[in-house]
Image (cartoon, one colour):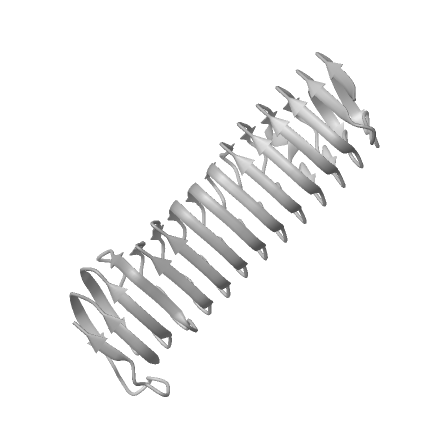
Length: 280
């Protein structure tokens, strides 16, 4: 393996197409583009990235204790077998078209438009802020220990398991499919509209008009905030709720069980079969 230590690179493609294995230690990648493009077998430790598009079309690389400055936007696209540990990512628009990606103890304070069209993603103890439109069109997502601040998250996602998360996000999980969320807070209006096979287990739900137009929605021992009103409109649902639901409107089928419900609205606009069993 080739080792490069304590050096500075900038400009166009300074380490382009290094495919025999390369370890970077205390390296700074300055202004420029595509510094490590088309490489394989890369390891970067204690490095700083400032230029655009450093890791495009790479296969098999590990990043440890590094910093991606804002100028390193769109740093990881069209790559395979990526592992990132203990790293600060200040750049937006990261992780596009990636297959097989693991992140542990990573912070992304400017994570807008991140994780688009990715497959086989694993996150552990990750924090993302300013994260509008994160996880768009992703598949096979495994998350445990996650904090999110940003709207329109997890839209069109398929096959995901999320545990121990704090999701401060509106319009989350729109048109998602086969998602299970355990022991998490989900706070934001219009949660999971048009989703299929969404299962929420011991989750706390906040925000107006949650869980509408859902197909095969399951809630197990969940709780609701006082602002989570007008829930379940036109949804097929099986829900067991601990405590109070502010209001329920025109669920389509299934059952809803809660300790109390502030208002049940069943009007002329209810859709067939319109036979949801509501118990409180």
